[in-house]
Image (cartoon, rainbow, N blue to C red):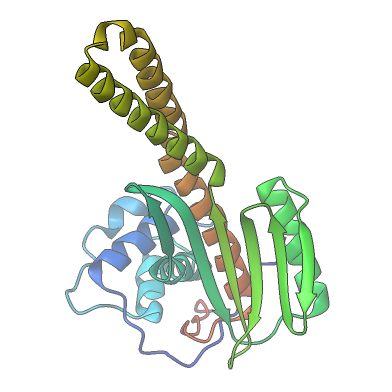
Length: 252
């Protein structure tokens, strides 16, 4: 796992201001951190300003109620990762998720290898690694992590597509469509009574396949999103992110 203790956040965009919704999300996550006191969350209900707050200001507020600056910085980075989130839908359902983070420098070979180890641990999958020049990737079926060079350093993209769920939903739609066609043609020919059992069987199978594919998708998407956000956040905090303001140290 990439180190997080003694976090130093790099970047020069010190005027990044978080709006009220982002502030609520940051303190909600930071208050749940093991580095924060148990009573801190209820003390943060009056932080909305309507004008936004910088990370330094959020850390100062958090420190007053027992939330460590590191916990606030980690939560703020997670909010930034979520702002760049990409979601793919199929029939209105979340079929694919992607998270990305841009780093202030390029990963070394050793850092990439440690990241691959963490990917295998988090996703419980061995996967395969490959490289093409400065491009690197780890893939396991429709699950992937791509390391791409950019002007500031590296961009890391995590993504996953639930191909199995999409296949089941597609098969279910096809079965229901077939049942409708059979019902219409049987009714037109006057043989609807004899075809009812087959139509019911097709409808039942179709609904079952659609349900088995669709029902787990929201939970799957939330889990994958949280896993990718945690990986991206840890990496940005340990390596540095060009669009994250510098953290302020606690007073001595």
